[in-house]
Length: 344
Image (tube, rainbow, N blue to C red; front, top):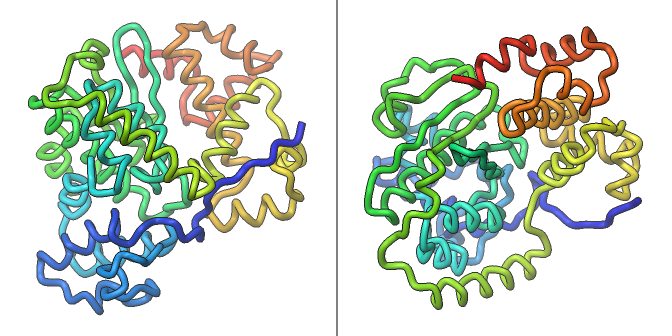
């Protein structure tokens, strides 16, 4: 079945310059960086951003992030940026987030309005009996800037939940990259339980914190803001990126493992067009399919508690050796090592 839908891509200009980009610009200016040097090569002008009419693509935002990192040369830049990100000043979606009555409502608001609140990374929420998990996916081809936006996004979610709840919540953070030389910044901003070389870029928190009531929330103000945010997304014409849409399609089809031809047909484009679009985002089809099947395997292990044999059968591996090889390619680990890791 062919599904016609809309999405944004790395060169789609839809991010208001006075939203997340202005937050990063303000941070750089507060540390004495010249605005002309900061915006060099981005195609942006400070006066246009202040006027409130400029729209940036994720690609332009990544150029801005690269300039900020180069000019500031400070290990805490991403974390300080993240502390300023949420709820933010991004119109009704931010108002709805600020009026969340508990953590669950806040997380759902960020997930459903990610094009407005988290345009560079996609947060996804999963629950099991003990924990709520938020894992983050690259939605725009961040490439060398992925670590920066991961650090900022996890800091943003942690700082936002602390501010709105009135207490420091026991979040634990995991990153897929190796421990960096500036690990003390993670300890300061994210906590000393932060882990590295993980299978996912993920945060988790005990499930009971999801429904603890937050002070100062207004249910009526939230409902009005949510309606206005829906209208804002409707006017954009999309609520997710192409990589988001492809991930959902491949994850939902993990048992069948559709090929490039089937995926291109699903998105009503030629194989060459889909390959070109993925290349523009710094990725390719096999990498996206491997990621989706890896995440499904981890979900079946962690959330569903399935055995090695059941996971292999679900993913249509008739030969256990083939499943072990595939899982090793996706994760770098054998099935038994994965189960040990997830039990920690």
